[in-house]
Image (cartoon, rainbow, N blue to C red; front, side):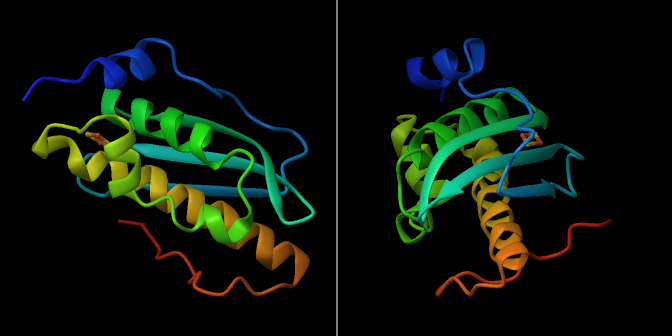
Length: 137
Ligand code: FES
């Protein structure tokens, strides 16, 4: 399977790249098998994700999925943000080659890790959100 046009577009012109200085939550995850790292920054106000950015040391598929995931999460409530799974991101990109499917899990995990960080900082519980697994290998 080739990369879809949407994947190529988000790889060549990634949206929302960069650090966020006043982020409400930051999540960093790594993929133990390839060593790639992804960090997601979220700005949350009144339970709504009003902005999202990312930085990644990762492959093209990781760049494309983070770009799409940050686009998808903007404007969503925290509960809605939890529905952004790697499957949903892959579907939004019209699919990824099977060998690259694991790359899209980074985006989902980083998103959830950033929400977790936000919840920790604010002493709140987000139903359905579990503490991110450690990825130190
Ligand atoms: Fe590592 Fe894609 S090969 S995230």
